[in-house]
Length: 227
Image (cartoon, rainbow, N blue to C red; front, side):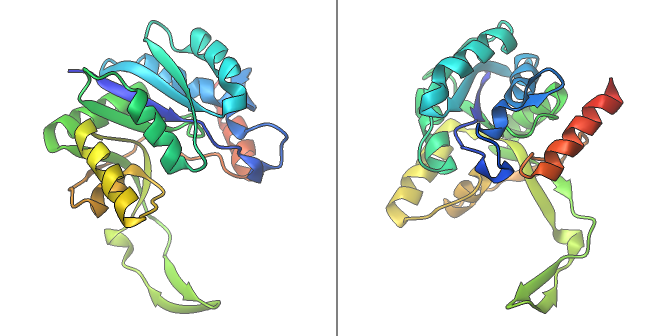
């Protein structure tokens, strides 16, 4: 019982200040998105890879998928106006015979095949599971530039991807969100809104999201240090 991977790459990535989306920027000789494609292509739990891409870059992403998805079957579908809409497009395009999905941000290039397999197996056991990172900083809640309280970091984690679950549960969560007008930034939030339990696994990789210029520089420095 394999899993459909949905790689969310539909955003414009304009916060980095480049003319093209960040998922296409170079990272050690290949586009950032290719790192995720390769990781999912090597994960044994993954049965197909669905890449959600900007409409104007579908051909480009298809060429990348041919080069970096290995022997895995793949589909490239257009994204929507938001991440939530884009992932739903990928969900609707996933194979009807596959009962689980794992959603991943294309801007997280350092996820490992072992982590992908592990989170998929956890989803099959518990219904839904996500990768997280432990919070090590002291976290303050701020209102109008004034600290209103300090949160208990022992109970806090930062949500990462992939996030895996039963496909039917995520479809139901999307339907409820559409009815309620609920907007989420990740799949776990949608599942929580629908009353589904989500278990977590602490990531052991350098699984950060490239969002700023500093992130891109750090990613490039990491890759150079690993070579």
